[in-house]
Image (cartoon, rainbow, N blue to C red; front, side):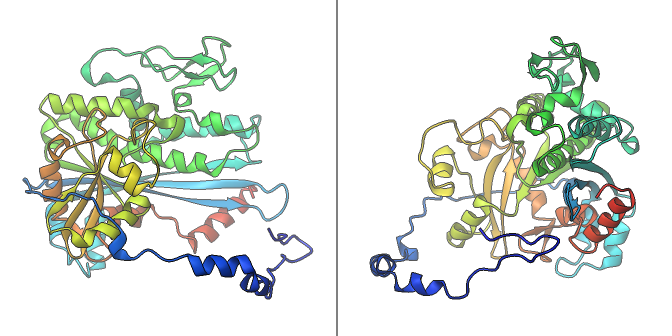
Length: 433
C-alpha cells in the first residue's frame, strides 16, 4: 500500500518499472503457458425459461428511490456526515404512456412530477459530529427516530414502522420481537404500540427505532458509512409501505389498482432484517384475504444483473426464469451448496429474470408471501398484472429502464458534482466539517 498524502507531503506513487521483474519471473512464464481462458461454448447454462401471459394493467404506480452523499473534513479529527435523500413519486400510468420512450420531453416530465412527488432528507453524523450533550452514538439514535417523525409526513412513517413491527394488520396485538438494548446490550422489548419506553433490564430510555439495531455497529464517536446506507434502505421500504398501509386501512380498491416499485432488491440485511418476516406475513395475509399487494423491484447491478447478461441471449421474448436456491448458489453466486437457503433471513421478494424483447431484460423481485426457496411462477403474488404493467412503463432512455424508477431517481439522486460541493459548503457553514 502506498503512503497517503498529508497536509505537508504528497502521496507515494507506484513504481513505473517494477513490472519488469514480473514479466521476467520464471513462475509467471510457466503459469502463463499452462493457463487458458474459458471458451463461451464451454459455459453450461441451465436456465429454464418459460413464456408468460400478461394480466390487466395497473393504472396507479408508486415508486421509491434513495441516494446518499458523504461529506468529510480534510484535516484531523476528520469529521464526517452523510446526507440522505429518499423520494416517492406517484404516477398515473396513462400519462407515462403519453411520453416518448426514447426522448421524453422534459416539460412533460416536469408536468407529471409537479404534484406527484415527495421526499425525505436528513443528515447522519458518522464521525466526531454530535448534538450538544450527546455522543455520536446517541445522536444517531435520536436522528433515526426523528427521521421517522418527519413533519412533512405527519408521523405516518413512524406509524408504518409500528404497523409492521407490531403486525397490526390483522387486529391481533403482537409482542415486539426482543432486541439488544443500546445501553446495557441485554435483550429487551417494548409494550404493544409503544414509541418510547424503557429497558426492562437497565430502565434507560428506548425508541421503537432501537429495535432496528443501528447501535449494534457504532462506537461512541464513530458510525460506519453503512449506517447511512442502511437508513436509506429502511426508509425507502417504510415510505413505500406507508402508501400500502394507508390504502389497506382506508380504501383497498385503490390498493387493487396500484403497482409499488422499489429500486434495488426486496431485502433488508443484517440486524435490520427484523422487519423481513413481518413484511412476508403481511403480504401472505393480504393475498389470502383476496387483496394482494402488487409489489416489485428492479435490480440494475450486482451478481444477478451480471448473470442475466450471460443468459439473456438464448431466452425467447416475453419469458421468465425463476431461479431456485440450488441455481442461485451454484450458477449465480458460484459457491458450494449447503447452509441456509438463499435469502432466508433477508429477502421478502424472489428473483425473477425477465426477457421482454431484445432491448429490455430485467431482474425483478416479486414476493411469494411466506419464504419459498424454490418458487414457481404461480407462487409469485400478482405476477401477471405486474408483468403486464411493466410492459407499459419501459423506457429506452437507459438500458432496460423503467420510467417510474427513472423519475424517482431524478428526485432522489445527490450528484458528486455539484451536489456534494454544495452540501459540503452547507456543512462547513454549520461548523460540522
